[in-house]
Image (tube, rainbow, N blue to C red):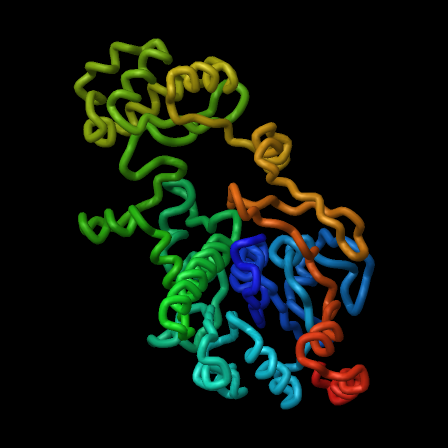
Length: 402
């Protein structure tokens, strides 16, 4: 048994935020029906190389990008611009618990597939709308792109070298976290439905997610009134708490309180700094950050990273190497936590996917379906779930509805 067994999700999202959300629900046992455009499908199918599997349609295979966020789903192709295609969506809604979409605000309303339309068909439907800027406000009609949101929402202004150019985060962090927040919101709405019997509309946006992610940085500004600035790899409220170069490689080291600062001084053999008025408290260390970092850097560069990391670990200090991605996936802890999954793919054989971040003692997440081929389950869903005949499916295809 899985937590979301008997929950059906109708997913008409593409790219990353929406697919990541519905993948999480599928991991936890929901049946996810992914609706894609005939012939092309989710545009992220083409976002490679690398690709896996056999060529099909116009693609050389499934992109690694696509398979990263589309396991545990069935794929059906439906032309949403076709009246018969829209009818299929409405029929599927009657059998669904959750509807997730990430079209620009207002697009589905024009097709008769907005919340007000679908709620009439199924009052228990949880309708999650994911957009760039939400369903109201002066930017509501804009499309949402992760890199643009990282710029507009302030993240790039606080990321990157102190005196260098603003930088985006190395992953599409706004898309991914919007998907995560959306999954959480859907679970809460399903729980509310358990209590009152009714579904509801969830309005999610990349913009709102971004501001929520600013967390302590936003609070520093809202409370203190001082605009945040870039600190490179340093912490705005603590020091030392950043990257240092040892003799052979980079590591990250922190002292989150005065007790850890004293331990650090003892490990580094500079216990005289403990009572140095410039560094005795965190506030003093922040005021004298540059002098402190200069002293520590000159000590740390004298030994290899592993030497320091062993000493810091024994002293209970926050520390770790700055690993490359290959090093991360070769790490014994990665293997111990089952964070690499080998999944059978219809045309590629066994493919590797990142593992589940959620660990349940009684109802574990599972891979029950590999990332689907485009339209792989169209006939199955139309015939077995909606009751179309084989001839009816052929007619829909002829009409350009699927």
